[in-house]
Amino acid sequence: MKEILKLLFNHEELTRDEACSLMKNITGEKYNNTQIASLLTVFQMRGITVEELIGFHEALLSTRVNVDLSEYRPIDIVGTGGDGKNTFNISTCACFVVAGAGYKVAKHGNYGSTSVSGASNVMEEHGVKFTNDNSRLRKSMEECGMVYMHAPLFNPAMKTVASVREELGVRSIFNLLGPLVNPCIPAYQLLGVADLTLMRLYTNTLQRLGIGFAVVNNLDGYDEISLTDEFKVMTNRYETICKPSDIGFTIARREELYGGSTTREAAKIFDNVLSNNATKAQTECVLINASFAIQAIEPQLPIEECVAKARESLESGRAMQTLKKFIEINQ
Image (cartoon, rainbow, N blue to C red; front, side, top):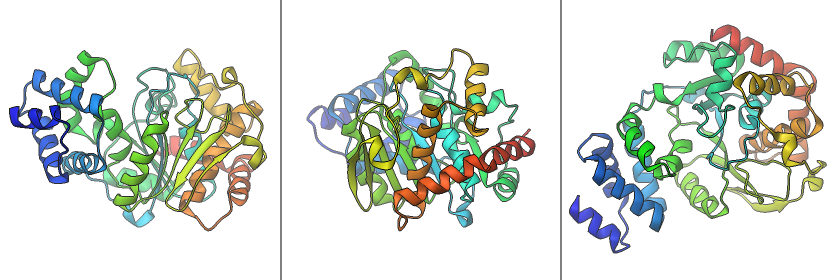
């Protein structure tokens, strides 16, 4: 450990294999909490390389509860979190819109750390029982095109660092890794980041991992396309900055995306969106994220056609039907 810390203090970089070995030692309880805190602090201060991130990613996936959904080639729609905006659960709403449009979705999520509208909070409020049983997950995918994987059931290694992370009280490399350790290893991903500096890190990493992706950021600091300002999109084919009006949407106000003060309020907003009874700002915010998710799966489609597919899923009632079927299967 002393040698590794010396390397990192001198701003030297770890190879992919060294990073993988280091993470296995961290989650394998080979180091004490003080040593782990030192490592997390170093990486937070000097940043992380693509090679290191891939090495850490490999280590965490090697200890996961395996889920084989590869034949469905699903997409995961997820944000890094930490934007402090307390929006309603846009990414999970978008999952059901995409599934309602006929695509396969494998959502990996957890309870909200800074809000009541985390994916697991909303799913639990709907009576969903979390599972890591392969047969139940496959049944859900077969019958409604959507599965939800509650992260703690699939990533037991993360428990070993929970106390250190809580005591530090700041974001760390584990926050960066969260969106990359979906246990089914999805074929596609829509990833929202709150910080522009992370976009290149994630796009280079996802490119190396062979995942079809779109990484998005609203330029005013949301970890999804919020339509409150211009937004940036980076894929393995292009990168661009768009105004909402470029794609036929209107600017939203921050307060229009409020996620509620209780899980019941968060779930009500969620249901309003999927039943097509939400405000224009809420609806359009979900549609734009679902549209770029669809384009990540079908990159040959212009974004306008993807918007039409997402809108049809919502307005036809298929998104809501997908939610109802999902709840029925997963209670």
